[in-house]
Length: 352
Image 1 (spheres, one colour):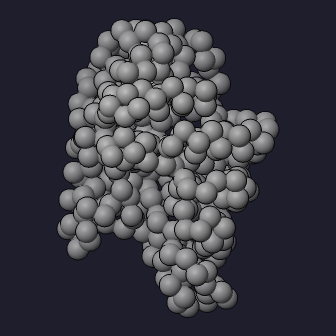
Image 2 (image 1 turned 180 degrees about the vertical axis):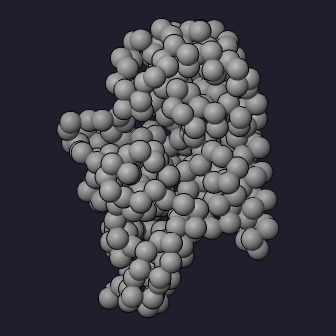
C-alpha cells in the first residue's frame, strides 16, 4: 500500500529545458504514466512549449496521471483566456488538471511589455478565475487590470482546476496558503527546508480560515540516480542546475536563506561571475557550471538533491515525503531512469 501511495505522489517533467521539437512530450508522458507516477508536470516556455497545446495533447494520451502546469504567468493571457484554458484542459482530461503560476524574472516580463506580478495581482486573478468557473459574472477594476464584464458562456461539467503557486520566499509561501490550493517549491531545498516551508504555507492557510491539510506541497527535487553518491557536484545534472539557480540575483539568496546556509559562501562563488546579466548567466556552458560547482560547500548539493544510487535516491525521496511534501516533482530525471527508480521504490517498500 505504501509503495502505491509513494509512486502516486511522484511526478516528472515532459520536455525539460528548451526543446526545438515538442513531439517527444508524447512518448515521455506515456513512459511516466506507465511507470506508475501520479503526475506529469508541464513547464511553459514561449517557443515550443505552449501550455495549452502540450497539456491538451497529453490529456488525450494519458488516462490516470494528473497534468500540472508548472508554471505559467498571469499576465501573458487575459483572465478570460486563462479561465477558458483551465476549464478546457480540465474538461479534456476529465478533471486531472492543475494550473500553477509563478512570478518569474522581472526583467523578462518588462522586456515583453507584461506587468511584473505582485501578490495582490496574483490573489485577485485567482479570485477572478474561481468566480468565473463558478458561473459568476465578474466586474473588476484593480491591480490585476480593468475588466468591465467577464463571464464564461458555458461552464464545464467538471470540478474547477486546482490552483498552485510557485514559491520559496516567506511572502510567497504565505500567499500560497492564503489564496491558492498549494505551493510548488523551488529546487535545491533540503528536506528540513521543505518542512519549514510546508509549515509556513499551512499556517497561512489556517490563519485565512482554510483547511491546512487540504493544501498541496509540491517539493521539486533535482534527482540524479546511478551517480557517485559522494560527489554529485561533479555531475552536470546536479552541479550545473544547482549552481545555475544560486547565481540568479534574488533567487540564490532565497535558496540560501530557506536552507539556513551561509550567505558569505554564496557571495564567494558568485564573485566568479561578477558583472554578468541574467541572460548572460543563462548562456554559461553547462560544463563550466558543473566545474565551478565543485567549489560549493560540500553539503549544499547533497542536502538539497536526491543523487547517488537508485536506492539512495529512493531513500531521499522518502525523506522529502516525510518532511511534509504531499508530492515530489523529480526534476532533471531522464525518462530512461524513471522505471529503475520506480523499481527501487518498490523494493525499498518490500513490494515485488
